[in-house]
Length: 96
Image 1 (cartoon, rainbow, N blue to C red):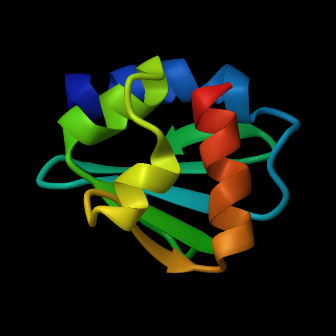
Image 2: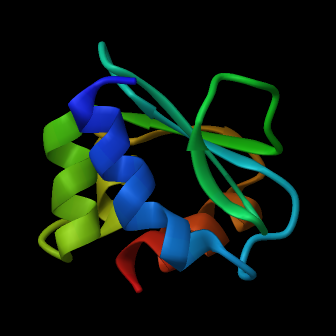
């Protein structure tokens, strides 16, 4: 696991634990992906109910609160594959 993905796992595990229904995948373009579910976060690239894809810079800005995830989606910086309702719930977890 790369240091970058390990950092995402460490930051997202406590946010995701017990708060996500189903599975979500966060794809860091060119780096790898993180799977989120009710157990927390781990490195992985399996099937998910919703997939959010962005660059490391955009994802870090979302996590820090400097980038609104909805605006990132509307401007094409954040790609969503799956239900928008689920994506909104995941983005609320990321920014919370």
